Length: 327
Image (tube, rainbow, N blue to C red):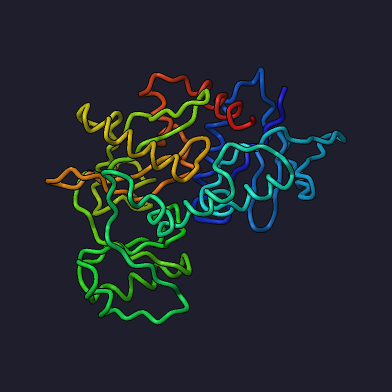
């Protein structure tokens, strides 16, 4: 039986979302194969909480535990931390140093894909893939509001460049709203992406390597009652409608599958990822938004919805993730 460290928590506002992901994963890991220990990490402590609510600190020197005088070493780390340090390569680098296999992309890919501007630069040039015109701003530089307004066309999205949670995002329709939106985004990150708004239908689609082959899951269409799919729209019941599988033609599904497969390969991804995109109104052109390398795993999250729609058993799905990325 393998000892699995189910790593959850993190340093961002998605701490509780990560905990809920861990609960769902834990109930769907095969108990006959895996002994699962949920490890909660925060800036203050890394702990395992026993059934008696005793907190046991992780030994960070070798990522081990002592439970009832028995030392527990881990065969595998299942990372389900959204944002830093589980989505940006930091935990991946740590586990690489300790030679502990894990379920996500490697250190380099995790770090690059967390940076929206860098990711867009790498996927640029893929056939039939488009990216919105944008500017990358840095906190330590002066920001000429008039220059931004002159180079890009309103409405604009203002978003933290290294955020994965939609926290700090704004949609602005005029130059007067720009300074406040930039200030809000810079509270979350020292880099900010200012991007032209693409009007169209919004989708999200999982791409995963199973049994050595890439599998594109059925797409989900996201219809939000808010102006855009922000943190509240993601996590507040009733605000957004998610349709899986999405209403797309066979031809659209083929084109989308080809594009997202190329994105996955070009970024050198591993395990499961989720790619968000927009099909532009009128043209139906594919506009890349971002890639998520540790997507949410609650019962209502998009990847579990898509796995179910694909006719794959969720326990088998997680099992193959562990076995496939352990090699």
